[in-house]
Amino acid sequence: MLSRVGHLMSIQSVSVATPQWIQEVLNSYHTDPVAHTLLQSLAITSPDDKGYSLENGVIKYKQHTWVGQNSALGTKVIAALHASPIGGHSGSLPITKSNTYFIGRV
Image 1 (cartoon, rainbow, N blue to C red):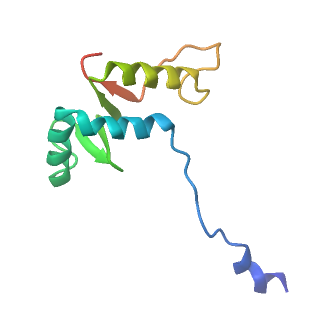
Image 2: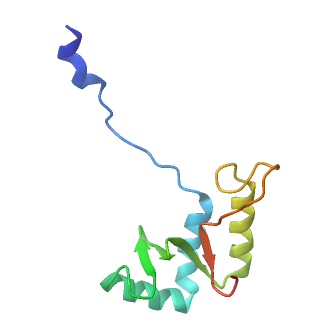
């Protein structure tokens, strides 16, 4: 009898957690002239031959989130990643790999 109601137990929706700083990165693109140029170019061809791509509105450079030259936002993103048990460490291990790319900070 249970096999007849199996469809009632199926997943109807999926939710995805998105860090708050991602939305701030997206908002920063509105005032960044380089981001405007990249967004226009990537709307036509993504990925491009320089390593840039567009993923859900987020500019990526070689698979890393592109932040641009907003130093205050860059500091905020670093702090968020550093404090995250997933993206950084929980106080005992250093960050060894970043998934974020900052223009002018390599």
